[in-house]
View 1 (cartoon, rainbow, N blue to C red):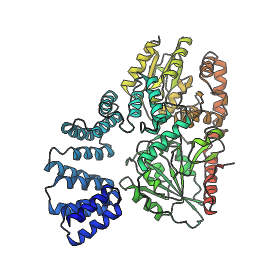
View 2 (view 1 turned 135 degrees about the horizontal axis):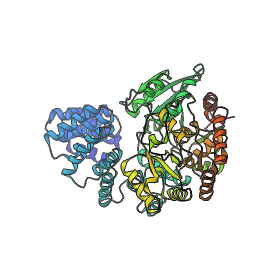
View 3 (view 1 turned 180 degrees about the vertical axis):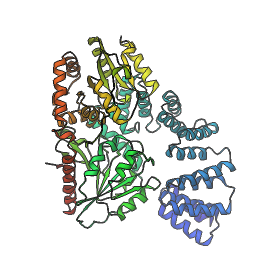
View 4 (view 1 turned 90 degrees about the vertical axis):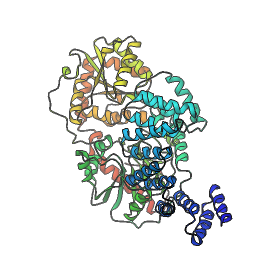
Length: 622
């Protein structure tokens, strides 16, 4: 028996799960109480993603030896994979009750609490793991990310740097460090960091999450490479459920929208009216929500748009795939891309025969299982198509949907309400602070020097970021008092306060997206610098779609000169504002009804190709 068990272990260690499983099941048939074999069967079925069966075998092992702490940790891991979070926590607690020095269970409990967004409790458990093993890099890394999410950036950086000291090649670490610094506008060694990270990516190192590169480099080739490295690392060894059988053609196309952001989030703010306007006589739309259960006004609004709104946050990827297939979803729309809270495993396993990336991630997924990406001819030029693993759906105007019913508050607001000097020219940028790079900030400070009675109005993402930006202004010879920070407020009030600004200055290489359409809807002109990447060209796409392409610049000098020219020419700026307010109601950008029809036209085209047995190809929507 022991010799047979050794064979099974050897096969398991070599990755030959089928042979290991066959031998172990035979041992189980003859010796159902063989403790070590029960644990091995748990490991085998866990690796095969058959978590329920893994739990069955570990339960048998627990029955034989209820005082063996590792059993409870293993059961907790399987429960976590099945999204049974509270059951997983109970298991980890049982493991540490038996062995208070079992740091793996503290770490794993931290991971579960982290996913539940209980960040303080997650950090507490990471700290317990670290009190037992101070060099546990995974606890340090996750603690860093939790601290970052709590906007405790200095503490997060300290935790990341400890990982760096222990393991300089820890996966995705360098990019996390740079992004954490960007979040608080800490630009120490910025150029050196960028040069180092670029070198790591080009050497195929697992050095950064793809999203980070969008805000650092205007290089589509680099964005694609980073995404492909991420996909390979996360999904190379994943076992595909089964191939997807051919679906019958329906009178109504079933479209599933998959997101963690069906609440008061930029994505829902953009798509709400589009979802409401979907032609229900031709399309059945389904919402798959794997984000927090927030019962806010936007959640209530968007959930009403779907034939079925499915809260799947407690379902595993495989369960969501099976549900999608049972519903026979024809087209799956991924609204997240490679961002926090992504669930790419759903698409890896083909939840639908046609899979589309839309809105959530301004770049390629690098995945061969995402068939299309929705864009427009400004965002992705012909020469840059090669940097996308998806085929392109070219929308006729802009790729971005908008809500033409979005309310602007009628409150009477004045500059004094926001600490803006009464007679000053107000440059503003309501993009998140991490998008502000030293090069762009240099230009902004030069503008303040040249436009004497002016201030720069920014959103306050964090106290630390605001303090660092004021310090950076002082370094460049600008009084910190000329940098004014706006706190976050309701959408309608936020839109209204745009009217107190004179000109919106875009960031680069990650331009304004939702913030750009907000500014334009509010009647505030924006000057953008358009580069080569999708992320850098969104401002240009939106300005073209509202008939203001003269506000698009293509190099840093022209960007600076145009802003200064407009700041010093009140008549010209007034005419631009007048044109913007006229174009809001006659140009395509905020014509949501037409946009929805065009989007549905693209869905019809790719659905038709699928049923004709044709492979995906670039689609141009008329």
